[in-house]
Amino acid sequence: QVQLVESGGGLVQAGGSLRLSCAASGSISSINAMGWYRQAPGKQRELVASIASSGSTNYAYSAKGRFTISRDSSKNAVYLQMNSLKPEDTAVYYCNVNYNYLSFRYLEVWGQGTLVTVSS
Image (tube, rainbow, N blue to C red; front, side, top):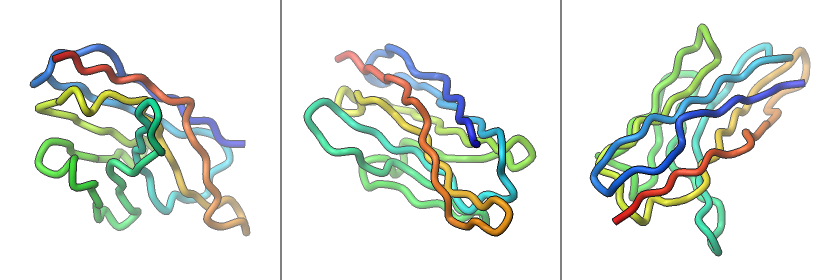
């Protein structure tokens, strides 16, 4: 069993910054990728940013230039630094981890979500 603990959400004014953190623990042999998704009210969940085990990153167009994803492999942790936040960034942000355990590959687990609210 794998648990994800997210933190860092909150209320911030437009133009401000927040840093989200997510740490994975439990039955993990190795991690393939970690990422952040978000879901705004009435909208589908969408990818914000992801980072592979190689270190390569992928960003949604809306996040490029403003958000930075990073990881600490020693802690099985992933971070999302969000700068120049806009009201349209308001959403519940979810951590996602794709991992392997023993002979089981490409397993997936989601965090409980952390709310980010950006006021105008």
